[in-house]
Image 1 (cartoon, helix red, strand yellow):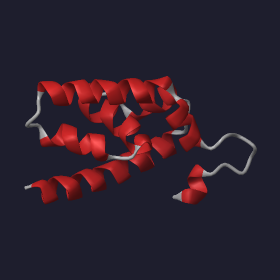
Image 2 (cartoon, rainbow, N blue to C red):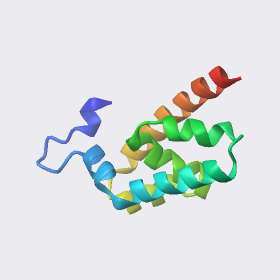
Image 3 (cartoon, rainbow, N blue to C red):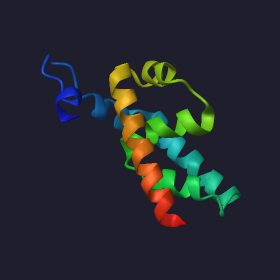
Length: 101
């Protein structure tokens, strides 16, 4: 995974682009508001526990219904990066939701 995410062609690291996007903070704040509205929703709490990169990709995919290509376009990163983060997020969500039972 690291090899694909760390650019060797002089372009900035795609993960740094995701974290620097104002939308990642906006979506985190939106997620916190939703947790306040739905405090018993484990999915929202587990989403908030994901790292900022994964959360910034998984949140619009699951909650907003965005496609992976729309997320990639919005965050200005490659589709492969988004797909990898979605896979990581899926695995983490499954594990953390199973632990919460």
